[in-house]
Each structure stands twice: as C-alpha cells, then as structure tokens.
Image 1 (cartoon, one colour):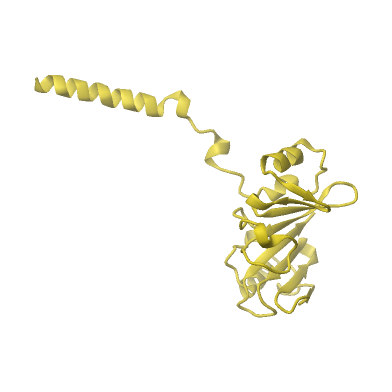
Image 2: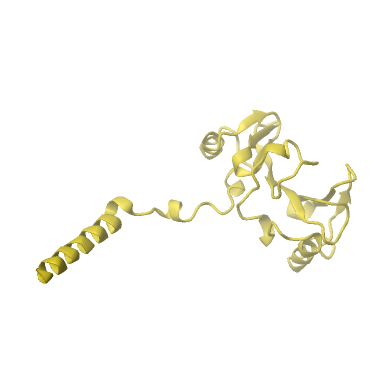
Length: 181
C-alpha cells in the first residue's frame, strides 16, 4: 500500500509540474519586464502615431487640451500645436500643488530620466547632473518660486523642468518632472 501512495504522489508531482510549467503559463518578455520608462515611447511623436494612440487608449487618458491626462500612470502628455507630444509630466510624489491637474494622479512608478530617483533631494539631483556634465555644476539654468511653495528648476540642456516640494532648499524632494523632446 505504501508503494501505491508513493506512485500516486509521484504522479501528482509530475501533473502539478507539467500544469504549472506548461506552455500555457509561459510569461512573455513584455509581461516579465514592463516598460521601465513609458514616457520615452511617446515623447516627440504625433498623436496619430499608433504607439501614442495605443498608450492613450490603454491608459484611459482623458483630454484637457493641451494635455492628455493619464492619471493611473502618473503622467500627463503635453501636446503642441502640431499635435505632437512636446513634453511629458511625471508626477513623482502625490500632493496638491503647482503642476497642472495633479490632485488625482497616482505617483509615477517608472524610471526617471538621467538616473534620478523619486526620493532624490535637490542636492542629490544637482550632484547627479553635475556628474553628467549638465548645467553649471549641476545647477539649473534658471529657476523660480511661482507659488511660494514649490521651486521650479529649468535644465535646458537636459530638456528637464523639475518641480521641488519647497522653495530653494537643499533637502527639497522632487515633486514632478517635465521631460521635453
């Protein structure tokens, strides 16, 4: 009787392995590794481009011209007069504030440009950009505090505008990033 249980157990293990590891459960490369930086796929492309149209449809983006708001992706596409994606806002940290329409956005979870991380402080951003030779020792080309709550830094060479969560403070965190083509 003991040998029957061993045989039955062995057959069950084989059946479980073939079911679990069979061709019906294989994971494609796209499923295994989601696009780490989806903004790159649409930046600079026309709204009529199939990749842009698919992105807008699959992410249920709503149109509030000149933007397409992709709230579940944590992104807003900035559309220029030629109907091209001129820029992409990446809403890195959730909170109400300066960046357009941000109140309802899920924080962006993809890869940020130039190796930046969502937890980088202004000092860390300047250090990283300096290491890449961007700006004047990593400092922005210009900046402003339009609402007395956020600091907006413009890095023209890198095509970035970074909004920080407080005025010129070395420990201010990235609030949002606008990436331009």
